[in-house]
Image (cartoon, rainbow, N blue to C red):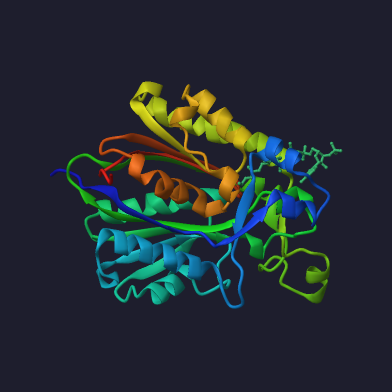
Length: 332
Ligand code: UT7
């Protein structure tokens, strides 16, 4: 029997309106536009403003955008998987809250916590649900409200992160198109270099943990950088080798947008020219689980049916991976 592939059949996104520029950051911490641009590639990031708004609100908008573009009703969705490290609450899952806000009355949902690799991990999981033949329409959302966990007095992290959401719809494909392969990796010993110290079962929230700023991102930038450069480049190359893909075969690299220098290193390792690399870090910064679907959304009109696309990520955990997608539709 011919195996069903899972193909991406629609992409949606949401970006908050407020633009936190490098110039504004210069008034908040001891930094400057030149340092931020040369060390990271970022000009500005979007920030979700407003009382009572959370990751689920951005996720729900991305889902509504996707349903609208695909022309289907929310009741048709079987499952929603949400990749995030900034859930609305520790529990219940943000996927369920997005489902409620977007009217997915017949979908079950759950969250995946794999930081910047979260979208790839969730995409692989969603792909298996479709491949099994048990579910017909699965939504994978990558969303993060990083501004909720950034310390805006810490110049080493506050210049990097932004807020946003992206979502894809997965459906069966019998023409050999869709998500074809994935290599995913985790190494929990990396937890010391990128984490949030308090608020979990290891160190529940107390007045002391708040005073010690332990509910913000803690990142040892240089160490993470070294692992990220090697991890993302190596796994992307490994995926190419495994599937006998040459640089000529690949139409696009869709890298996690953490740092322009990490993206360049990955493209170099794959021998890919700059024109084949999706880069929007200058506009949105690092939106964690949202970077990859935000790229797909922005480049959607340039993608052609049959294009070979490599998605690649590295993030907290450590987690990293690469996924090979044969694009399933023309949307011009
Ligand atoms: O997405 C999840 C995974 N995360 C990543 O992939 C992030 C990986 N890490 C990075 O992207 C980079 O390490 C950073 C962008 C975080 C930092 O860049 P770096 O080139 O590694 O800088 P550094 O930490 O080595 O710092 C160099 C200098 C230091 O000053 P001294 O000690 O040389 O005097 C820092 O204090 O730059 C200073 N610095 C800044 N200066 C101006 C650090 N942050 C800033 C800043 N503005 N915002």
